[in-house]
Image 1 (cartoon, rainbow, N blue to C red):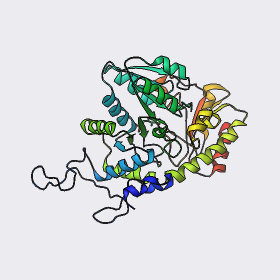
Image 2: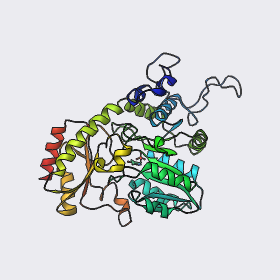
Image 3: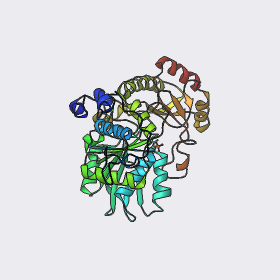
Image 4: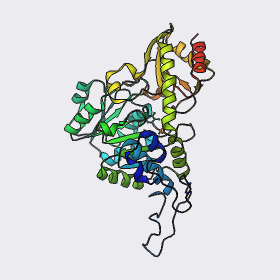
Length: 380
Ligand SMILES: *Cc1c(COP(=O)(O)O)cnc(C)c1O
């Protein structure tokens, strides 16, 4: 199949074939790991292959980038060394000192730290608002607003923001709507189809899917914006290495089937938690009208609050046997964590602080009955 053949095809086909073709040299059915920095040139200024140096372009990374563009319905995908490297590159490409961005009231902790501790010193102002509150988003827009940054569902509270409405607000303000689609993945939600200008991923999570690689991505449908971002990817240099790009591409091939199982298992666990005496609140987007409109299913991330306060939440995190106590998410194995003391510790004392009695699960693809038994015993 040629790269273009996959364009009109269903998502389950595109994860495997989108942007891909057999290796032109050998017919290898998956792109080889081109572990190489430089490429022979046919005379000064005459490129043999279109490649000159692997920061600028590398065939393995190109294969991943074409696939990412296909999955998100964009024209250009770009792969980075981490999600935060992708975010930093994007913000410096779109903004200059003196500009302003609107960010989610409960952004991913590392994203919040990038704005509050790094880019603020560089001269980028920001306002954090709860993005399910559309009036609050509108009120936060200033003349200097260049970017509306959206994460939906959010981490760790799984709040949902209306991408279509935010796209309209950004457009009216002359700003770009950026959506961090890490939690949903393009299997469940495709922000570009809803009007977003740029999609951000930590490919470390569901796209990689096996907790064996750190990576990031940007995708846009606007060719001109794609050029600008590509220029900055090369100029700033935080690219994905060939082996990491290959691992992410390998992970993506099973994204559709993994996501089906993540959702099946999460739904079973949510049903159990909702009737458990020790659980005071379950955060899962299946009951949200906006989520129903813009997501096909609701993913593998589940958060819940427990009676007995912070200590009980911490104790539960230490008692599971199948759920591994660890940061990160989106892998085949189930993880549990305490956001207040782990992933979101850097937001303590800020507007983005999370409740102490909150536990976050990344539900894996193990047997659902085993997972439920493990949680039940940890809840006591
Ligand atoms: C992990 C994560 C990031 C940051 O990605 P890294 O690959 O860890 O740099 C950004 N946004 C969300 C929602 C994440 O979960």
